[in-house]
Length: 437
Image (cartoon, rainbow, N blue to C red; front, side):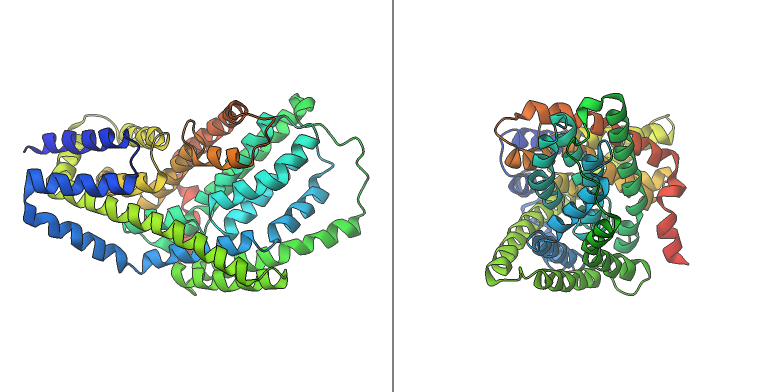
């Protein structure tokens, strides 16, 4: 078969099977096996077996279950509840302050856990009822939580960033640190939007009428809630940035810190450990199955000449490199509306990275752009993950239409963040460059 026919067959087959609703891991693995036997050589099935062994012995992937376990422990520790109470004391008098405080907490949670579901679920249970009780616009409240909760994709330690770095074969440490600046830029955009809405539409974020001024001493005392998260963030990010530990070693340190934090909050019970371990096992198994299926698919796609055909097509186009970059990012945003984000990374990164190298772009910078598009996929209707996390904690009086309407402005803000990251590549990669010195 010609390489063009391979392109059509593999992408067409993937699209067809995905429409059946089958799990993506088995679609990728099964399609790879089918195409290998029918259109290549039955003996080439050994390639699929080698991909499985290559995945299972990867030390870099060991960081994934550790970070997930850390997130699972912290979600049971009670640290997040104390953080929210502290933010409420500091931002409660500001118009739109609860929403601003929610963004700040999500930034802290992102730097502690890197797991989106934990942040969205926790804020959906803590912040959403309080904002609704204060007569906040339901659209603003749900949109804020959904968007801010996805900051864990950029701000390290991010599981998705690790998957990208392993797949793209770039430094995991540099890729993790590179997410800090764009993550803070997006958080700043969210806060500015919230304050603007609160100023233009006071009814969307009203002040609390019965609010009693809180003494400064009490507010300062509440900041004790930041001590444990701050130490944990310092241990993880500091050890990676200064080269003291690898990302995997930093993950192990993070788990140890999460155990201490949970113990200090007197929440370290056998039931908590068992449930955290069970959640970690389920999430890790899902990621590894998708990884195995995607690596098999990409290996067969490359072996049959599909990757070379695509790269040759790109080289033949008489357009500027930024046009090609924009097309790739638009493809990623579109895929984010229908596919699992880990599947998107594992499928497209091996195809896109040679194109990025050919165009002369920095791979770490492209990784930042990639992560922002994944964020956009996480909140884009109809299948954005955060929308379903929010649905799980949504009061019965609210419906999903409110969530969809509320997320649109934040989706556009993420688009603005993507344009900023494209326009200022040096700003996005300043911290990874400092790691080299």
